[in-house]
Amino acid sequence: MPLAAPTAHADALPRLGAVQWQAAGGYRRETLPVRVLQFGTGMLLRALPLALLDAANRTGAGAGRALLVQSTGGTTADELTAQDGLFTLVTRGLVHGAPVDDARLIGSVAAALRA
Image (cartoon, rainbow, N blue to C red):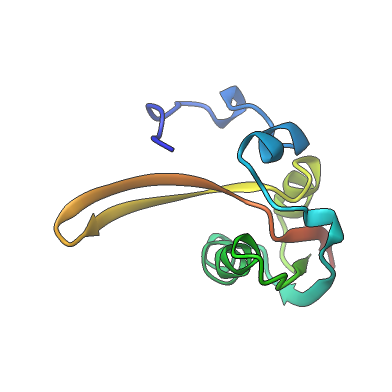
């Protein structure tokens, strides 16, 4: 899915939810058990382990979903909850010298809580 031009304000972006998940051809998230307890909601933790869990679910492996615990201040857990645990992972860089500019919807979060 190609990326749109960068937006100056994140508020201008639509909230994610079940409609976007179904439109993206997502797997049946609600049937997967919670198998991962992850402390931390930062970008790196969402981009690596949660993206890998999502990729496994997309193959039909039924790897499960994650329960996130936000242990620091901020609003990430609330924002994830408002978006049904969905977030967009943007990948930019080079693969074999060719530019990569990709965005995909990640659905491996079951819930996000604040400690």
